Image (cartoon, rainbow, N blue to C red):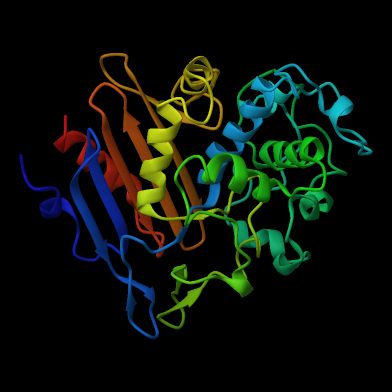
Length: 335
């Protein structure tokens, strides 16, 4: 076997970690968290992770289901005090969790190319809580009848964040996750931070300007603070601790974990498989490899855990590097 370091491109910017049975095989940091001041990325650097936060929200929802405060078949009409307009009030929590709700998506990746397009008429600095995204979807019609098919949907997880807030009372969804997921999960460096108030050790995320041949940060390209759809900052060690806590039954019961990492929906071409907040890659032997991922301007992230091999691979880039290609190389190398 080649060393993992031998297959990492020299121009990769970010952090990568591979562990097996909890022991670190490789942990590599390259590039700068602050490019102008040449502050290097480190293993304890906090990176933005885009949609990866959906896994955390899913755990929060499933905790509430375990506590009897919510059901998989609870509907948004009965849970939220909102004028849903054209949105079907019979959409269930489960349909939000597995992307089969048909709820109008404020960022429909099938028709929009760039997340930055959202902020042309609605400044990103207005988005400091999940409810701030309501104007971007509340007046739109359903995309398709609820339950009709799988289609990845950001709005669904924004609504799940709103549901957490409704059940938790005055507690914002990210405060709930800090107390009930990040704390018990051994994730002290994980949280939802405002881009204009970032705490220590947070990496800037960089986008390359082709016209000026220079990098600029993504502070005007993404929500100023993450929502139920994503936007958490975290570190490599925190992500590894999350997997350990989740699969060890410390966050939700083992039977709920099994639901989360089993196929709950799939694309019509049978190429994409989804649990609850977790993607599933199907191997040639039919085994399922759970992973969660995220992509925003300047951000790319993937983390997987092979339950059979006890192999965890986590890669994040704050320059939007192709972490998926690198992840596949490592999976092949560790096969």
